[in-house]
Length: 183
Length: 260
Image 1 (cartoon, rainbow over the protein chains, first blue to last red):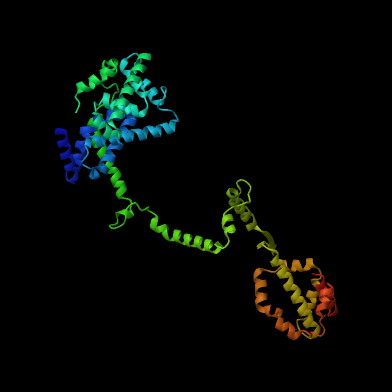
Image 2: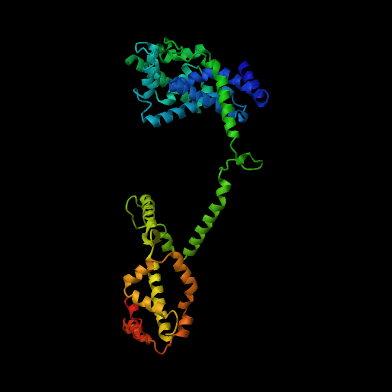
Protein backbone atom coordinates (compact mmCIF):
# COMPACT_ATOMS: atom_id res chain seq x y z
CA UNK A 1 0.00 0.00 0.00
CA UNK A 2 2.93 2.31 0.75
CA UNK A 3 4.25 1.76 -2.73
CA UNK A 4 0.90 2.68 -4.30
CA UNK A 5 0.75 5.79 -2.17
CA UNK A 6 4.25 6.71 -3.17
CA UNK A 7 3.44 6.24 -6.81
CA UNK A 8 0.36 8.42 -6.41
CA UNK A 9 2.44 11.20 -4.87
CA UNK A 10 5.04 10.90 -7.62
CA UNK A 11 2.36 11.11 -10.28
CA UNK A 12 0.81 14.17 -8.65
CA UNK A 13 4.20 15.86 -8.44
CA UNK A 14 4.83 15.03 -12.09
CA UNK A 15 1.72 17.01 -13.08
CA UNK A 16 3.17 20.16 -11.52
CA UNK A 17 5.72 21.79 -13.88
CA UNK A 18 7.75 22.98 -10.89
CA UNK A 19 8.20 19.50 -9.45
CA UNK A 20 7.93 17.54 -12.69
CA UNK A 21 11.63 16.74 -13.10
CA UNK A 22 12.06 15.88 -9.45
CA UNK A 23 9.11 13.51 -9.57
CA UNK A 24 10.43 11.89 -12.71
CA UNK A 25 13.84 11.42 -11.12
CA UNK A 26 12.06 9.78 -8.19
CA UNK A 27 10.28 7.35 -10.51
CA UNK A 28 13.52 6.47 -12.32
CA UNK A 29 15.36 5.91 -9.05
CA UNK A 30 12.57 3.78 -7.69
CA UNK A 31 12.15 1.45 -10.67
CA UNK A 32 15.40 1.58 -12.60
CA UNK A 33 17.00 -1.49 -11.05
CA UNK A 34 13.94 -3.73 -11.32
CA UNK A 35 13.38 -2.70 -14.92
CA UNK A 36 17.06 -2.92 -15.75
CA UNK A 37 17.34 -6.53 -14.62
CA UNK A 38 14.08 -7.42 -16.29
CA UNK A 39 15.46 -6.03 -19.55
CA UNK A 40 18.99 -7.35 -19.03
CA UNK A 41 17.79 -10.92 -18.61
CA UNK A 42 16.08 -10.61 -21.96
CA UNK A 43 18.74 -8.82 -23.99
CA UNK A 44 21.76 -10.11 -22.00
CA UNK A 45 24.21 -7.35 -23.06
CA UNK A 46 24.59 -4.31 -20.75
CA UNK A 47 24.90 -1.75 -23.55
CA UNK A 48 21.70 -3.04 -25.13
CA UNK A 49 19.93 -3.15 -21.76
CA UNK A 50 21.03 0.44 -21.12
CA UNK A 51 19.67 1.58 -24.51
CA UNK A 52 16.36 -0.18 -23.96
CA UNK A 53 16.02 1.12 -20.40
CA UNK A 54 16.65 4.71 -21.48
CA UNK A 55 14.07 4.35 -24.24
CA UNK A 56 11.63 3.01 -21.68
CA UNK A 57 12.05 6.02 -19.40
CA UNK A 58 11.93 8.48 -22.30
CA UNK A 59 8.59 6.94 -23.29
CA UNK A 60 7.50 7.16 -19.67
CA UNK A 61 8.34 10.89 -19.64
CA UNK A 62 6.34 11.48 -22.81
CA UNK A 63 3.39 9.31 -21.81
CA UNK A 64 3.09 9.82 -18.08
CA UNK A 65 0.72 12.78 -18.42
CA UNK A 66 -1.76 10.50 -20.16
CA UNK A 67 -1.17 7.61 -17.78
CA UNK A 68 -4.47 6.23 -16.52
CA UNK A 69 -4.19 5.99 -12.80
CA UNK A 70 -6.65 3.14 -12.59
CA UNK A 71 -3.71 0.83 -13.33
CA UNK A 72 -0.57 0.58 -11.27
CA UNK A 73 2.46 2.58 -12.33
CA UNK A 74 4.59 -0.48 -11.61
CA UNK A 75 2.54 -2.64 -14.03
CA UNK A 76 2.60 0.07 -16.68
CA UNK A 77 6.37 0.43 -16.44
CA UNK A 78 6.90 -3.33 -16.73
CA UNK A 79 4.65 -3.42 -19.74
CA UNK A 80 6.62 -0.72 -21.51
CA UNK A 81 9.91 -2.41 -20.58
CA UNK A 82 8.65 -5.78 -21.85
CA UNK A 83 7.43 -4.30 -25.14
CA UNK A 84 10.65 -2.38 -25.64
CA UNK A 85 12.71 -5.51 -24.96
CA UNK A 86 10.68 -7.60 -27.38
CA UNK A 87 10.90 -4.88 -30.01
CA UNK A 88 14.66 -4.73 -29.55
CA UNK A 89 14.96 -8.53 -29.83
CA UNK A 90 12.82 -8.52 -32.96
CA UNK A 91 15.14 -5.96 -34.54
CA UNK A 92 18.15 -7.96 -33.46
CA UNK A 93 16.64 -11.10 -34.92
CA UNK A 94 16.04 -9.31 -38.21
CA UNK A 95 19.59 -8.02 -38.35
CA UNK A 96 21.25 -11.27 -37.43
CA UNK A 97 18.70 -13.51 -39.17
CA UNK A 98 19.03 -16.03 -36.39
CA UNK A 99 16.36 -17.86 -34.40
CA UNK A 100 16.35 -16.62 -30.85
CA UNK A 101 14.85 -19.92 -29.65
CA UNK A 102 17.90 -21.72 -30.97
CA UNK A 103 20.23 -22.92 -28.26
CA UNK A 104 23.20 -21.56 -30.14
CA UNK A 105 21.64 -18.16 -30.79
CA UNK A 106 23.47 -14.88 -30.51
CA UNK A 107 22.36 -14.18 -26.93
CA UNK A 108 23.59 -17.56 -25.71
CA UNK A 109 26.92 -16.82 -27.30
CA UNK A 110 26.96 -13.45 -25.57
CA UNK A 111 26.40 -15.23 -22.25
CA UNK A 112 29.29 -17.57 -22.95
CA UNK A 113 31.54 -14.66 -23.86
CA UNK A 114 30.98 -12.99 -20.47
CA UNK A 115 34.25 -12.69 -18.59
CA UNK A 116 32.70 -14.39 -15.55
CA UNK A 117 31.10 -17.21 -17.49
CA UNK A 118 31.66 -20.66 -16.00
CA UNK A 119 29.99 -23.54 -17.84
CA UNK A 120 30.17 -25.75 -14.75
CA UNK A 121 28.29 -23.35 -12.50
CA UNK A 122 24.56 -24.01 -12.12
CA UNK A 123 23.78 -20.27 -12.24
CA UNK A 124 25.29 -19.92 -15.71
CA UNK A 125 23.64 -23.12 -16.88
CA UNK A 126 20.36 -21.66 -15.65
CA UNK A 127 20.92 -18.54 -17.78
CA UNK A 128 21.66 -20.65 -20.84
CA UNK A 129 18.57 -22.73 -20.13
CA UNK A 130 16.41 -19.59 -19.92
CA UNK A 131 17.83 -18.37 -23.23
CA UNK A 132 16.77 -21.66 -24.80
CA UNK A 133 13.13 -20.90 -24.01
CA UNK A 134 10.72 -19.18 -26.41
CA UNK A 135 10.51 -15.44 -25.68
CA UNK A 136 7.10 -15.50 -24.02
CA UNK A 137 8.10 -18.38 -21.71
CA UNK A 138 11.31 -16.53 -20.88
CA UNK A 139 9.28 -13.52 -19.82
CA UNK A 140 6.91 -15.56 -17.70
CA UNK A 141 9.71 -17.50 -16.07
CA UNK A 142 11.80 -14.38 -15.32
CA UNK A 143 8.86 -12.40 -13.93
CA UNK A 144 7.88 -15.24 -11.63
CA UNK A 145 11.27 -16.73 -10.73
CA UNK A 146 13.30 -13.53 -10.32
CA UNK A 147 10.74 -10.76 -9.80
CA UNK A 148 8.26 -12.95 -7.86
CA UNK A 149 5.41 -11.25 -9.65
CA UNK A 150 1.86 -12.39 -8.84
CA UNK A 151 0.02 -13.97 -11.78
CA UNK A 152 -2.66 -11.33 -11.47
CA UNK A 153 -0.08 -8.59 -12.04
CA UNK A 154 1.67 -10.58 -14.71
CA UNK A 155 -1.56 -11.01 -16.64
CA UNK A 156 -1.81 -7.20 -16.87
CA UNK A 157 1.80 -6.86 -18.01
CA UNK A 158 1.67 -9.62 -20.60
CA UNK A 159 -2.06 -9.38 -21.38
CA UNK A 160 -2.50 -13.11 -20.87
CA UNK A 161 -4.88 -15.01 -18.60
CA UNK A 162 -3.63 -16.16 -15.22
CA UNK A 163 -4.35 -19.80 -16.10
CA UNK A 164 -2.27 -19.60 -19.25
CA UNK A 165 0.53 -17.93 -17.32
CA UNK A 166 0.54 -20.66 -14.67
CA UNK A 167 0.73 -23.34 -17.37
CA UNK A 168 3.43 -21.40 -19.19
CA UNK A 169 5.51 -21.04 -16.01
CA UNK A 170 5.15 -24.76 -15.28
CA UNK A 171 6.32 -25.71 -18.78
CA UNK A 172 9.16 -23.21 -18.66
CA UNK A 173 10.44 -24.45 -15.28
CA UNK A 174 10.35 -28.05 -16.49
CA UNK A 175 12.25 -27.19 -19.67
CA UNK A 176 14.85 -25.26 -17.69
CA UNK A 177 15.34 -28.18 -15.34
CA UNK A 178 15.69 -30.60 -18.25
CA UNK A 179 18.25 -28.34 -19.89
CA UNK A 180 20.36 -28.11 -16.74
CA UNK A 181 20.23 -31.88 -16.17
CA UNK A 182 21.20 -32.64 -19.77
CA UNK A 183 24.00 -30.11 -20.20
CA UNK B 1 -0.45 -11.00 -3.03
CA UNK B 2 1.52 -14.26 -2.81
CA UNK B 3 4.41 -14.34 -0.41
CA UNK B 4 7.92 -15.42 -1.34
CA UNK B 5 7.24 -18.67 0.47
CA UNK B 6 4.25 -19.43 -1.74
CA UNK B 7 6.24 -18.78 -4.89
CA UNK B 8 9.09 -20.94 -3.60
CA UNK B 9 6.67 -23.72 -2.71
CA UNK B 10 5.22 -23.58 -6.21
CA UNK B 11 8.71 -23.92 -7.67
CA UNK B 12 9.58 -26.80 -5.37
CA UNK B 13 6.58 -28.70 -6.67
CA UNK B 14 7.65 -28.12 -10.28
CA UNK B 15 11.42 -28.42 -9.94
CA UNK B 16 13.25 -28.90 -6.66
CA UNK B 17 16.52 -28.41 -8.55
CA UNK B 18 15.69 -24.82 -9.45
CA UNK B 19 15.05 -24.01 -5.78
CA UNK B 20 18.66 -24.75 -4.97
CA UNK B 21 20.09 -22.28 -7.47
CA UNK B 22 21.16 -18.85 -6.25
CA UNK B 23 18.95 -16.24 -7.83
CA UNK B 24 21.43 -13.42 -7.37
CA UNK B 25 22.62 -11.37 -10.35
CA UNK B 26 25.34 -12.97 -12.39
CA UNK B 27 25.81 -10.00 -14.68
CA UNK B 28 27.98 -7.04 -13.80
CA UNK B 29 26.96 -3.41 -14.16
CA UNK B 30 29.32 -0.45 -14.70
CA UNK B 31 30.39 1.39 -11.55
CA UNK B 32 27.76 3.87 -10.30
CA UNK B 33 25.52 3.08 -13.27
CA UNK B 34 22.28 3.33 -11.31
CA UNK B 35 23.43 6.46 -9.46
CA UNK B 36 24.06 8.32 -12.71
CA UNK B 37 21.21 6.93 -14.76
CA UNK B 38 18.38 9.32 -13.67
CA UNK B 39 20.43 12.44 -14.47
CA UNK B 40 21.61 10.91 -17.74
CA UNK B 41 18.05 10.11 -18.84
CA UNK B 42 16.85 13.60 -17.91
CA UNK B 43 19.62 15.26 -19.91
CA UNK B 44 18.78 13.03 -22.88
CA UNK B 45 15.11 14.04 -22.64
CA UNK B 46 16.01 17.73 -22.38
CA UNK B 47 18.31 17.51 -25.40
CA UNK B 48 15.62 15.76 -27.44
CA UNK B 49 13.01 18.32 -26.43
CA UNK B 50 15.23 21.27 -27.30
CA UNK B 51 15.89 19.70 -30.69
CA UNK B 52 12.17 19.19 -31.24
CA UNK B 53 11.39 22.76 -30.13
CA UNK B 54 13.73 24.10 -32.82
CA UNK B 55 11.67 22.47 -35.53
CA UNK B 56 8.51 24.23 -36.63
CA UNK B 57 5.50 21.98 -36.51
CA UNK B 58 2.04 22.73 -37.84
CA UNK B 59 0.66 20.82 -34.90
CA UNK B 60 2.04 23.59 -32.67
CA UNK B 61 -0.45 26.06 -34.12
CA UNK B 62 -3.51 26.34 -31.89
CA UNK B 63 -6.55 24.83 -33.53
CA UNK B 64 -4.60 22.82 -36.06
CA UNK B 65 -5.36 19.15 -36.03
CA UNK B 66 -2.32 17.17 -35.00
CA UNK B 67 -0.44 14.54 -37.01
CA UNK B 68 -0.34 16.66 -40.19
CA UNK B 69 2.82 15.97 -42.23
CA UNK B 70 5.22 18.93 -42.30
CA UNK B 71 4.95 19.46 -46.07
CA UNK B 72 1.17 18.95 -46.19
CA UNK B 73 0.20 22.53 -47.02
CA UNK B 74 3.11 23.20 -49.36
CA UNK B 75 2.28 20.22 -51.56
CA UNK B 76 -1.52 20.32 -51.21
CA UNK B 77 -2.31 22.53 -54.23
CA UNK B 78 0.01 20.47 -56.44
CA UNK B 79 -1.70 17.26 -55.36
CA UNK B 80 -5.16 18.71 -55.97
CA UNK B 81 -4.26 19.92 -59.48
CA UNK B 82 -2.75 16.58 -60.31
CA UNK B 83 -5.90 14.83 -59.12
CA UNK B 84 -8.12 17.19 -61.15
CA UNK B 85 -6.08 16.44 -64.27
CA UNK B 86 -6.32 12.72 -63.64
CA UNK B 87 -10.09 12.97 -63.26
CA UNK B 88 -10.40 15.02 -66.43
CA UNK B 89 -8.51 12.39 -68.39
CA UNK B 90 -10.63 9.64 -66.85
CA UNK B 91 -13.82 11.54 -67.74
CA UNK B 92 -12.66 11.89 -71.32
CA UNK B 93 -12.09 8.18 -71.59
CA UNK B 94 -15.19 7.16 -69.66
CA UNK B 95 -16.98 6.28 -72.91
CA UNK B 96 -14.11 4.04 -73.96
CA UNK B 97 -13.69 1.35 -71.32
CA UNK B 98 -11.26 -0.54 -73.50
CA UNK B 99 -8.92 2.43 -73.63
CA UNK B 100 -9.27 2.89 -69.87
CA UNK B 101 -8.23 -0.72 -69.32
CA UNK B 102 -5.19 -0.27 -71.57
CA UNK B 103 -4.17 3.05 -69.99
CA UNK B 104 -0.73 2.96 -68.46
CA UNK B 105 0.22 -0.37 -69.99
CA UNK B 106 3.46 -0.02 -71.89
CA UNK B 107 4.26 -2.70 -74.43
CA UNK B 108 7.53 -1.17 -75.50
CA UNK B 109 10.85 -1.79 -73.90
CA UNK B 110 13.95 0.31 -73.87
CA UNK B 111 17.55 -0.89 -73.59
CA UNK B 112 18.66 -1.48 -70.06
CA UNK B 113 19.97 1.68 -68.42
CA UNK B 114 18.68 3.83 -71.27
CA UNK B 115 17.08 6.49 -69.12
CA UNK B 116 19.93 6.47 -66.65
CA UNK B 117 22.50 7.12 -69.41
CA UNK B 118 20.47 9.24 -71.82
CA UNK B 119 21.02 12.47 -69.89
CA UNK B 120 24.77 11.98 -69.94
CA UNK B 121 24.79 11.11 -73.65
CA UNK B 122 22.68 14.11 -74.57
CA UNK B 123 24.87 16.38 -72.48
CA UNK B 124 27.96 14.97 -74.22
CA UNK B 125 26.39 15.57 -77.65
CA UNK B 126 25.35 19.11 -76.76
CA UNK B 127 28.88 19.87 -75.62
CA UNK B 128 30.31 18.54 -78.92
CA UNK B 129 27.83 20.46 -81.09
CA UNK B 130 28.46 23.69 -79.23
CA UNK B 131 31.84 23.86 -80.96
CA UNK B 132 30.25 23.55 -84.42
CA UNK B 133 32.21 24.31 -87.58
CA UNK B 134 34.64 27.15 -87.26
CA UNK B 135 35.40 29.27 -90.28
CA UNK B 136 38.22 31.71 -90.32
CA UNK B 137 37.42 35.10 -91.74
CA UNK B 138 40.16 37.53 -92.55
CA UNK B 139 43.32 37.26 -90.58
CA UNK B 140 42.60 35.40 -87.41
CA UNK B 141 38.98 36.47 -86.89
CA UNK B 142 36.88 33.40 -86.16
CA UNK B 143 33.13 33.01 -86.38
CA UNK B 144 31.06 29.97 -85.75
CA UNK B 145 29.04 28.49 -88.60
CA UNK B 146 26.58 26.32 -86.75
CA UNK B 147 24.26 25.50 -89.63
CA UNK B 148 24.05 25.40 -93.37
CA UNK B 149 21.34 28.10 -93.46
CA UNK B 150 24.00 30.69 -92.95
CA UNK B 151 25.94 29.52 -96.01
CA UNK B 152 22.78 29.24 -98.06
CA UNK B 153 21.66 32.71 -97.00
CA UNK B 154 25.00 34.24 -97.83
CA UNK B 155 25.12 32.54 -101.23
CA UNK B 156 21.54 33.60 -101.96
CA UNK B 157 22.31 37.18 -101.02
CA UNK B 158 25.35 37.25 -103.28
CA UNK B 159 23.42 35.59 -106.11
CA UNK B 160 20.54 37.98 -105.66
CA UNK B 161 22.77 41.01 -105.53
CA UNK B 162 24.67 39.95 -108.64
CA UNK B 163 21.51 39.05 -110.55
CA UNK B 164 19.60 42.21 -109.70
CA UNK B 165 22.57 44.49 -110.09
CA UNK B 166 23.27 42.89 -113.44
CA UNK B 167 19.76 43.67 -114.47
CA UNK B 168 20.18 47.28 -113.42
CA UNK B 169 23.48 47.48 -115.18
CA UNK B 170 22.04 46.15 -118.39
CA UNK B 171 19.21 48.62 -118.22
CA UNK B 172 21.32 51.53 -116.95
CA UNK B 173 24.67 51.25 -118.69
CA UNK B 174 25.56 54.81 -117.81
CA UNK B 175 25.56 54.22 -114.07
CA UNK B 176 28.75 55.01 -112.13
CA UNK B 177 28.61 51.71 -110.42
CA UNK B 178 28.51 49.85 -113.70
CA UNK B 179 32.23 49.35 -113.78
CA UNK B 180 32.26 48.11 -110.19
CA UNK B 181 29.61 45.52 -110.83
CA UNK B 182 31.15 44.45 -114.06
CA UNK B 183 34.43 43.99 -112.25
CA UNK B 184 32.65 41.93 -109.64
CA UNK B 185 30.93 39.93 -112.35
CA UNK B 186 34.28 39.06 -113.84
CA UNK B 187 35.92 38.32 -110.51
CA UNK B 188 33.28 35.97 -109.13
CA UNK B 189 32.59 33.44 -111.81
CA UNK B 190 32.86 30.22 -109.81
CA UNK B 191 31.33 29.10 -106.47
CA UNK B 192 34.81 29.00 -104.95
CA UNK B 193 35.42 32.58 -105.93
CA UNK B 194 32.13 33.61 -104.35
CA UNK B 195 32.92 31.66 -101.18
CA UNK B 196 36.34 33.24 -100.97
CA UNK B 197 34.76 36.63 -101.40
CA UNK B 198 32.31 35.93 -98.60
CA UNK B 199 35.18 34.83 -96.39
CA UNK B 200 36.86 38.20 -96.83
CA UNK B 201 33.84 40.02 -95.40
CA UNK B 202 33.45 40.68 -91.71
CA UNK B 203 30.19 40.11 -89.83
CA UNK B 204 29.79 43.83 -89.44
CA UNK B 205 30.23 44.42 -93.13
CA UNK B 206 27.61 41.83 -94.04
CA UNK B 207 25.20 43.20 -91.44
CA UNK B 208 25.73 46.77 -92.58
CA UNK B 209 25.21 45.79 -96.21
CA UNK B 210 21.97 43.98 -95.43
CA UNK B 211 20.70 46.93 -93.42
CA UNK B 212 21.49 49.37 -96.22
CA UNK B 213 20.48 47.26 -99.18
CA UNK B 214 18.10 44.67 -97.80
CA UNK B 215 15.27 46.33 -99.67
CA UNK B 216 16.86 45.42 -102.95
CA UNK B 217 15.53 41.92 -102.40
CA UNK B 218 12.01 43.10 -101.72
CA UNK B 219 9.46 41.55 -104.00
CA UNK B 220 7.78 44.87 -104.63
CA UNK B 221 10.97 46.45 -105.88
CA UNK B 222 11.78 43.47 -108.05
CA UNK B 223 8.32 43.45 -109.59
CA UNK B 224 8.47 47.16 -110.22
CA UNK B 225 11.89 47.23 -111.83
CA UNK B 226 11.93 43.93 -113.68
CA UNK B 227 10.30 43.69 -117.05
CA UNK B 228 8.10 40.73 -116.37
CA UNK B 229 7.43 40.19 -120.03
CA UNK B 230 11.01 39.18 -120.51
CA UNK B 231 11.00 36.71 -117.59
CA UNK B 232 10.53 33.00 -118.38
CA UNK B 233 7.08 31.60 -117.76
CA UNK B 234 6.49 29.72 -114.48
CA UNK B 235 6.03 26.44 -116.35
CA UNK B 236 9.48 26.87 -117.86
CA UNK B 237 11.05 26.84 -114.37
CA UNK B 238 9.18 23.69 -113.55
CA UNK B 239 10.09 21.89 -116.77
CA UNK B 240 13.71 22.94 -117.08
CA UNK B 241 16.29 23.48 -114.36
CA UNK B 242 18.39 25.60 -116.69
CA UNK B 243 15.71 28.19 -117.34
CA UNK B 244 17.09 30.69 -114.82
CA UNK B 245 20.62 30.18 -116.06
CA UNK B 246 19.51 30.70 -119.59
CA UNK B 247 17.74 33.90 -118.60
CA UNK B 248 20.78 35.19 -116.74
CA UNK B 249 22.94 34.38 -119.76
CA UNK B 250 20.51 36.24 -121.90
CA UNK B 251 20.73 39.36 -119.79
CA UNK B 252 24.51 39.07 -119.59
CA UNK B 253 24.92 37.73 -116.07
CA UNK B 254 26.32 34.37 -117.08
CA UNK B 255 28.82 34.29 -114.19
CA UNK B 256 26.03 33.89 -111.67
CA UNK B 257 24.70 30.76 -113.27
CA UNK B 258 27.73 28.85 -112.10
CA UNK B 259 26.79 29.48 -108.48
CA UNK B 260 23.91 26.98 -108.66
